[in-house]
Image (cartoon, rainbow, N blue to C red; front, side):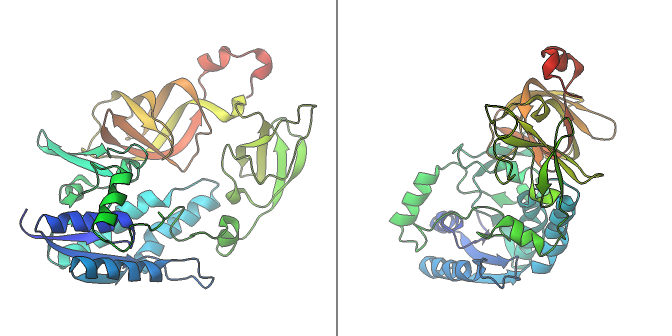
Length: 375
């Protein structure tokens, strides 16, 4: 392809190999390094080192490198939403918003100002133009597929984007990096939320949201202990409750089953698959369809309820307000408000939305022994 392509360089191996593959095609490649977080007195943020790694990659590839800060935009569009969701007792995933608002928002626009006709990243996803529209497909490597995080990106932006790694497995990317002498070929992949880094989550959050300790209760209202603040817990969580084995010879572990915001109470249950942890439907809001509209009012597809989870078969029903109800053939565990439900037909990502609520149908509950039912 003719024209300039700007590659979002993170300082990691994936974006480095993406730039190298494009350079090999004879393209006019420029690198763009963006800084999204600048407040880090404890030294957990790796942005400075990542920039130096990006510089070394660009020197090796002999391509220009541009640097820009989107810290203000990130704080306003991503981090504030993250704090608001935590304060409301939900479990947000800021990576989805970072892609929509930052990488394919202000960064994409900045690349245009640099003369880019095409934009590229190191995401493990694929794009296909068929029937007059762009389609987002899973990455070939199922362990690295990142289509889940890209479901909220506009089709118009995807149409001007390239994912050079979409058809590769991670092991092959590492091999390419080593073979081409890229200085980051052995660099460890980043994990967790970018602005938190390797620091403890609770300690980080305490700097932005005041702690509100409260009571931990069992499902039948027995007081069991105290929590540090509802924002520090997520549904299905076992570790960090400080309860140990109680009530019963089996001393079964406790799991977070619900958050009662009105009373500031954390509700816990014993048993990994306790009925209060299970649901067979969810409601998703703020749903984004990559095609611009849902493929129907009643849709047979699969859903991924967390990035690392397997898809589960479901039927979607879309109401007149665009809200989606997903019904599952089998019960699902710890479906968490604030996370994203992302919908697929085979390899194609249709879109997704924020999980607002979940529950169990009367028919499903009726199949349980009476002693196992909870209202």
